[in-house]
Image (cartoon, rainbow, N blue to C red; front, side):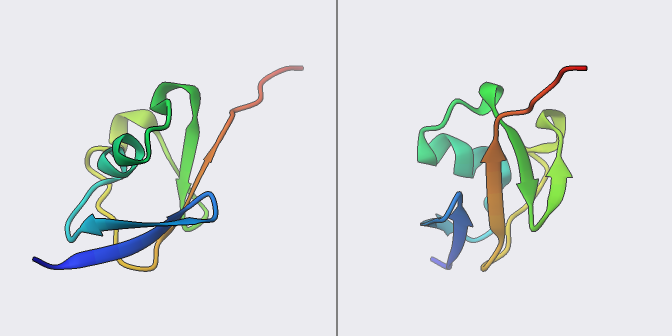
Length: 69
């Protein structure tokens, strides 16, 4: 079985090849609804996380969205 390594908030995670962003967040045990996400600096909306396939070496950032005026 092929495996990839990606980085989520500075920590390495090993996943099966062809994993998606939603699977990474679930495996990492983070509250995906409370976070905004970016892969390699590109924002990924919650609605697209299941379609966003990860590649080995991807850098994922999960962060609290800040709104205000």
